[in-house]
Length: 273
Image 1 (tube, one colour):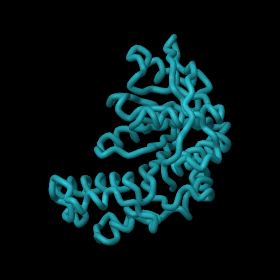
Image 2 (cartoon, rainbow, N blue to C red):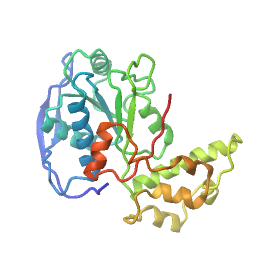
Image 3 (cartoon, helix red, strand yellow):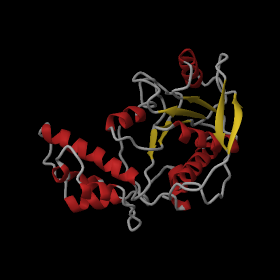
Image 4 (cartoon, one colour):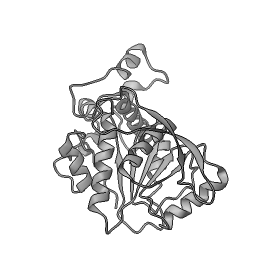
């Protein structure tokens, strides 16, 4: 879906999104659409959000965007500022006394905010953001529990709308390798519980990476639509049957738009009732 690169302009601006006197000075990235230095994931995010907010003015769909890095949130905040999408933000620098105010304000739909920017490790296990019915997990964590917790922010008791979660991975990059290791950990856990005969996990059963595995981890693959699908097909594990490319069969208009733009090359779909 593209690669990170180039430089961005930093500017200092007043963040007035905090409620109840919770205001602070933030550094923002100036977003300039069409800049070749932008990552494919940021272009994909721009396409997704633009379609969501244009196609759902009546249903008022709102989005939580989760990242492991505050600098990434700075860049996404620059995108939102450029598009005039009002937002709230909660990260490690947010005053503890302000956090629940931000969450309550967003969940009660008291303002015009369409986006809630969230640092994955700043919310704690009890953070409930049912004011949004869509969530974008912008980058993966080595610990699958962190990602699972982040994705559950909007899918909680009290949610009355269908929930859509977008998980963005740059094809063939270390991000996809991180996700593959999450899949392996799940396979190992299932094997221990006796649910499956793991084929993918047995290839890397040691506690440490070998030199060859480290080299493979930092090797960028440009010849694939989805490295994870290729790996699972090669390993012939049972979960491969669930790894079909749904990019031609998606119903979500925002996802269709991003696929049409070419920023998404493969769609793995997981439906929960």
